[in-house]
Image (cartoon, rainbow, N blue to C red; front, side, top):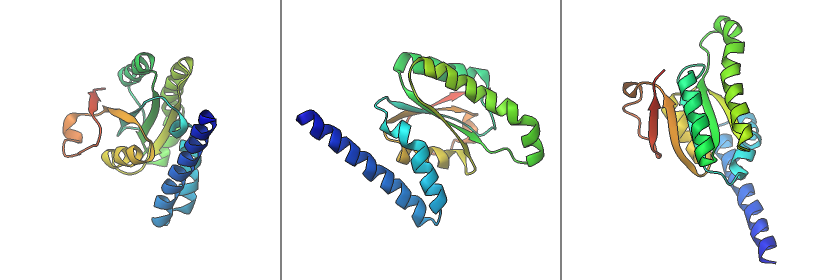
Length: 167
């Protein structure tokens, strides 16, 4: 009986969290974005694994960042939310589309072996803003692994510990 009550409370909690996220986006006038984010983030939000954010202000990750994240997943049994910057021009997008997809796909394959979740988001805002935003949307984010130089985000204050990986 207690187990059923606990499961019911967990479901209610998840519904309330999803609703809160949807309301936050809706208040900004982004109804479609709100619905998309709620649907997209549901698996990682419902997971009981700790989460890490792997982020870069580039359109793709370097090999060292991907291997570092894969090692963390293996040791910590955590889920990964991968954030990459949007490609500035559509001309570059056509040339780099396959290259940008493959590194994250490789990370996703590595993580699946550990039965963890890997979600990828392309960000349009600044890296610090995106990390702060996703820390609010996804609970139990332990830390961020950022592929950048420290001086690129030195002024940024994040609510979680940050580890830097240089390309």
